[in-house]
Image (tube, rainbow, N blue to C red):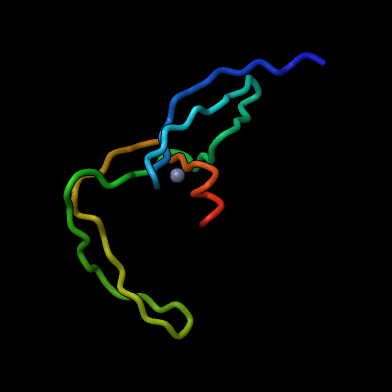
Length: 85
Ligand SMILES: [Zn+2]
């Protein structure tokens, strides 16, 4: 059986910054990382602003909104970070 065709794309892990060499196959599947789609990622210096509180079961937690700059970025994690989550 013939190996599936793939190309290598360079990405980096959002969590630890490690360089990832993703093997992307023709059918859209991939290896060597975990892809979560395109997200708004906070960049640079910014502040979390408290915008309210929420209740999780009987735990109260504050809700924050990022007030700094955001950019759309592909969100990748390496397998190690993904395993720890
Ligand atoms: Zn990582």
